[in-house]
Length: 155
Image: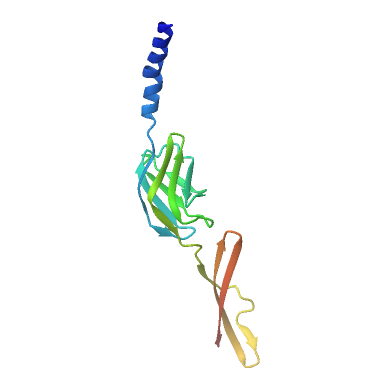
């Protein structure tokens, strides 16, 4: 019976313990910027980012993230459903959580000018006018918001 116990102990010391010691826990040292809107990139700097399976901002999974080859930086694109809170990095060897909270600024408006107004110029009774339609849009979660500003110039 002592021979079996010695064999088990030897197996644990020679095989299992080195495997456990080589599996380094991930560590988040810092992230930047401290606040961001959807579509922006957050850079997470740390150690042992190997085989990362999930990155969470405020408890919400981020779909688009990339780990660099040296395993010390993650670039994550803030999704429209992100939330404020701690940043978490998940991998098979463990989980790392930031010390400070990330601030989600919400969705950002994308400005633009719409030049395909037809007809342009527009004929009116007192001559021709040129129309400019300025606007911005926001796609955030389950809704889309559009804002427009119309500018008319007499030619």
